[in-house]
Image (cartoon, rainbow, N blue to C red; front, side):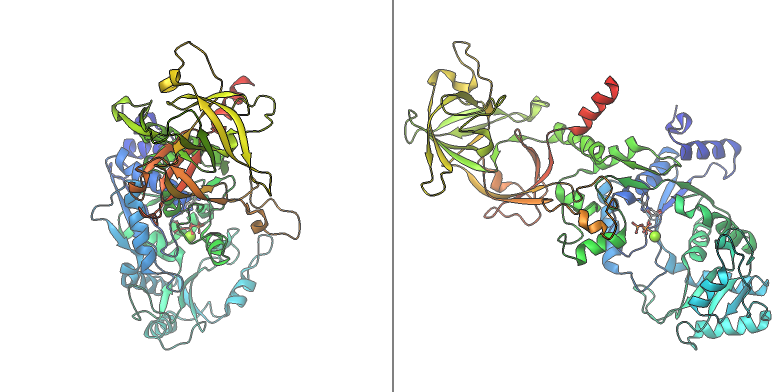
Length: 563
Ligand code: ATP
Ligand code: MG
């Protein structure tokens, strides 16, 4: 049975039905239609996975089409980054790369045809007047005084608009539908406006540009798209989408709406992402805290994790918000299988093992991935002075603290048991800066010959062989589940987490990690998954924490099952 037949979601259900009834002759053509006015975010990933996934499941094709009808905000930089991101996610549009701007000529002819059929007119109302005349949900609109221009007059005016004779704002072309329609989108919507702006592809050829609604459905039609899948806010536009195709009497694609992705602790709108960048809250589109594809990639996400996430959340018709914990759970699931384990100490505390000979080096054998033994083993050098995590020591241990404290014995991972005998403090601050310990030579490999057990295990790095690195520890960008959850008078940006990035400048990593290439991923034992930053060099390594190990989703899931 194909996935279509099990119809895992309602969109697949609709397509399976269409294939049974022969509506599109069994063809399936979808499209992903980004506007090149920003970088893609994880919400777009949902749409990409859906559209390309449908094409794959039903033996169809998915087009990549740039909806580039608004020259003021668009740029080739975005056209390129969008292609890179879609490819990175693992999808291929083959020859089917299109631009709405390639259809400007055809769209102009369509508009002319509507005028000839008495279905469109040139209007002189200003933008404000158009809004005022439109009315609202309780009040019907008023007809424009220009609504009854003759076809000839309209054709001449539209030609002059196209020839660039008028200034911006002087005229618009509007559909002649119904100013009393309950659906506001049908109250004589604007089809074309005058914009004297250079387009990133068509240059200065066009002084008029089609509105999104007029361009989108006709582009679907020109490309013979069968199922035009979009987000729910376009549901109210569907009657207009259908009206154009009907009036023009051209091939009709079927628009289907699904709920857009929202994620807790996250904003997903280009406008807001741009605000975060311009306000200096993050360092650009690919800041690892951004929900952009490029940010997630730099953070260490894998395309597989993002695709699995999109699979798991599925598509529905009702708006909802997905827990970021589910995204992180899906990520861990994937990284767990593929990431070699290494040791790194983010906040180092020096440990001198007094009975270990100076100058001696032993190879400690460590498994690269207990989840995948084919990944082999490696040797990690052990010496008299090592670093452990400051957090793994307490001078006065609280209850249930099983790690190191004076008089207590713990295991150094895969190496030896050590016992802390005394501490050295900074004379002025009183802070513990060094531990004096002894080791038990009969515990090589981290197990005691006499069967003696210890409760704590610490990761460690040899001082002599350590790689110095900067490690950036990230947390959610917003402290509240819903960034819009603010008291009156404040702003969503007041919910930005001041600790969303904590830079550990003097981390100590096991040898060799300075040779890891940007994008390479590791599990730092006990700490989480980390990935080499794009700006990292062997001389100055930089790692990003992708995600911590603690899986809050798994825990919530357990709680849900208990209740
Ligand atoms: P934003 O609202 O973030 O600015 P957009 O909708 O303006 O995004 P487009 O470039 O127009 O961005 O979107 C391309 C496609 O991605 C559209 O089909 C749109 O419906 C879809 N899309 C955008 N955001 C989401 C989301 N959060 N969830 C699912 N699909 C989305
Ligand atoms: Mg949009």
